[in-house]
Length: 405
Image (tube, rainbow, N blue to C red; front, side):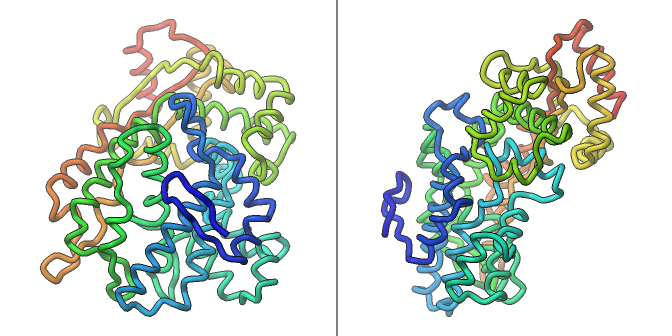
């Protein structure tokens, strides 16, 4: 059977993959937006995790075909690569990264780790399908590990799914660009795949790939602030995350129940829950929280950058900071949010290229990549959201905030 895809055209699936697509967890992906609340900014961007999962299946298969054509012996690996690609996102919750913020805090698992756990769980429908197909426990375990970018036996198997330049990015970058209308031709996945090679069982690219990888680096930088980290989308995702957190911490729902829900199901649940969780959901579409402070990366000295990133990774420290802010501006804690993105970094800048017979990082042979990578931090911003507006000057509040970190 095949699916007609807006990005790749015909995506063919085999009988095993159709069985997996017929499971409840795969079907739920059709109800989970690929980029959370992105449609608040780009109304046509309503593609789902299911479309992306089929897309990465296609891209991973194209990489396999290219490597086979170049004489690499990977015939026995193709099945597990395709299955891992198809299942790589089953651990996502509703609104994708919008719920991942709180789900990771509560479970200690990234969505990739959650995907892997579902695959190896012998009580899961996915695992049952794989075992019924005669797939060994070792291959099932390897399939789960590949989602994390790991394969000790043949490292490129993991790199193909989760790495600096992987099948995941080679699908979502052109897909997100197409649905938003934002520079849709910037990432030419097919050209990048054409120049892929293996060196000591690791992925590497021919030097001819350089201009196409440069374009990909440029796309990552452009999409960072305009799509994936758009301030309206980040605020909406953080607001949704806080509403889910309230529901979990009041024992109205568990993290694992949230993870299984679709976008519509979690919104319906939170709206019916009442209290602050419901009020926060209404603020996503109607009257958003106020952004009362924005601090850019270059405004922080090295010590404060380090402390901010530590706070980001420590839920107790972050909540303590939010409590101090709520008390300072006389706001409810539930409506006081500190939004700290991960450290700014463009992974693709470090992808290895064969240049003069030696593997070197892309940024060492591409001045454009080096410049974009070095300047990427200028797009990073920490923000504070609140239902309140500031009664003091922004300068005074900024000084207060900095004194807390």
